[in-house]
Image (tube, rainbow, N blue to C red; front, side, top):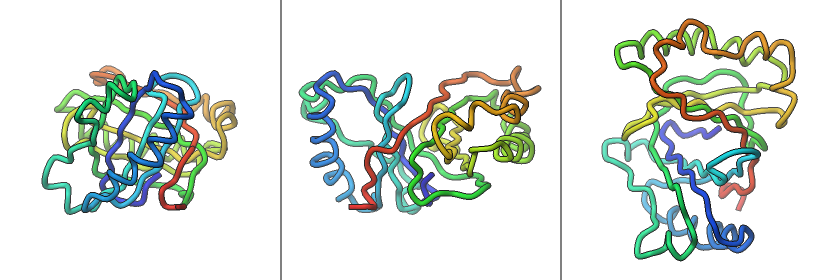
Length: 205
């Protein structure tokens, strides 16, 4: 989704009024975060089904990768005042990309997974050389990028640009391509498969 080779991905749920929260998040919170050196832009997405409800993908200057990126943010009681819960944020560096990418994708698919450590190289070869080509050959799947976490878990993240929120998941081609094949026994944790809709793009402001 993002063009930067380093991204910070933050997910959260909020218990306060959604409209008021989004107004604060976009109008106050994002400008404050993006004023930091090296924070280049952000796109916010809402989950169509499941959690976290709000996902923000920040583009970072690659020179920040040498140090742990401090997420954001929610200090001095802000989380409590804004009703923020289940906040989770990690920084990822890009390790692979394929397909055609949209400048401003309206829908993305996000997949996170952990792998048995000594099987990571085999998993990456399979994902890049077998799984990506199979999935991106399916109707509605436009392009994808893979990332590796630099500051925790889950270790691997994939973000796909989608044509829309339904067609990519309803074709015979997808039914044949989806799945972990013989990699499943080495998966240590499958943390998520979510579809998100773009609700704000700081690059368009």
